[in-house]
Length: 314
Image 1 (cartoon, helix red, strand yellow):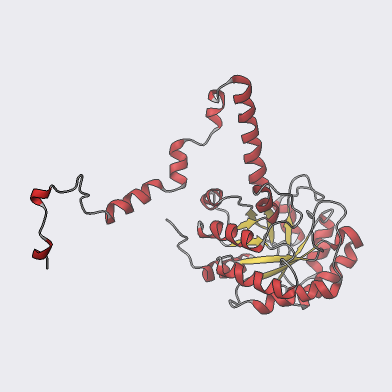
Image 2: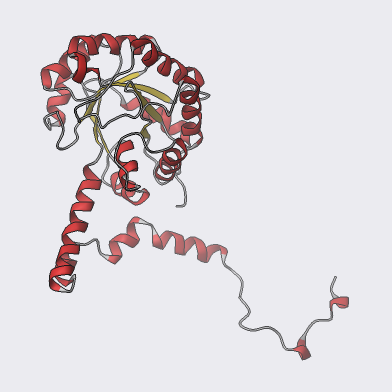
């Protein structure tokens, strides 16, 4: 109720405990604090917060237009609403290495369990689009070193993402991943790998956990958790799945209203009032309110005849 029952430091330890190579732990992407309640209720071990989703919710494309304050605020709102550890997309760190350092500390303050920093230039592009431009190795490693050095909580996870596979091939990407680990990355996000053999090669080459991005309509096939676990993957994210599903349903019901003049035919597909109240713990808030609201509220001001003389009060 109101806030997570777990501290941020505990959730950070929980995230680290989950990142076991070969387990392919599923982290659905939350797009609102309400959606994270569903993720927790359905028994998932953790939550992913996509930078693309935050941008899209603001009506923006995923091209580096969001600010650190916007990302930290939305990430904090989602992390507050769940006991699950939340990994957030911090794009390129919002600037130079000093900006990256501040980014990490702001995300720590917001209660996130970890973040990933990528090696594209600004303005960045969605990882599954063509035309990406990468920074040089020195810039990429300085970003990660700054992120790792800036932490005040050693359990805050610093993950490095590389998009180099798309521009320079897998071998060059693996070399960069190893350099990012040497710079302080504790986990690796190799974006837009082509097939399972590439995941296998990356996992075999690294001594840290590897993340697989199973986003729809992207460069990677939508492999199953079993397939990814066998390849050695530690964590699987589904970053935009819930947003796409929700927006698809919203579009369909709006079209129904426009054509039929009523939403009646779509009501059976909606979350019921009772179910919504259950997700936001309406009953729990009511019980709490009743337990502390133990006095009577005056229904009207006392009449002048019954007013208390302030000189008689002690």
